[in-house]
Amino acid sequence: MTIDSRKSDFVINGTIWNEYVASKGKPVIISTGIAELDDIALALDACKRMGNDQVALLKCTSSYPAPIDEANLVMVKDLAKRFNVISGLSDHTLGATAPVVATALGAKIIEKHFILDRSIGGADASFSMTEIEFAAMVKAVREAEKAIGADIKAGALLTKENIRSIRPGFGTHPKFYGQMLGKKTIKDMEKGDPLTFESVEP
Image (cartoon, rainbow, N blue to C red; front, top):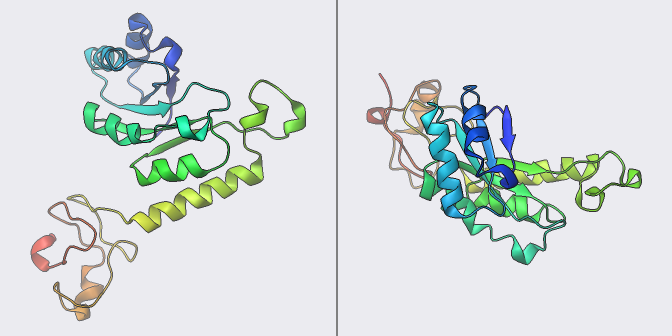
């Protein structure tokens, strides 16, 4: 998802501002932080009134740094389900634990403060990641994604990354593996589902 506009939790209930941002027709990312559920609903309604449904919600704990035991990451999954949107994490905790856990809970966007050198100082220097730390976090998140496995949506292209031959085999014979590559699915499938020719386009 392309990040074109991000709104903080401190302006989430500004209806005029929400409508203005949404009216540009660009993807909108809203950090929820101190917002109540009603505030979030109002912000989403404002975007929809402008004909913009390209909205993502980020779970955020508005503490700097945020204690890990206040992260409440179950809200990542709750926001996605409750409001039928893409959800993610605006993270102020130390380290990469919260981003990795959020990924396991379905986060599609991770926002983390970044700093070139902590000696520069500044209000967020203590909980910002350096280049090396940020790279390590990205690696950990990508590994978490691989460990989770990905569901395949209808119309998805079959590749070496999302299909494999396993035992016991209840799907198409492994000899057809090469023929399956490059085909598109005609239905949603979950990790572990048997793959047959009835599951793909001719």
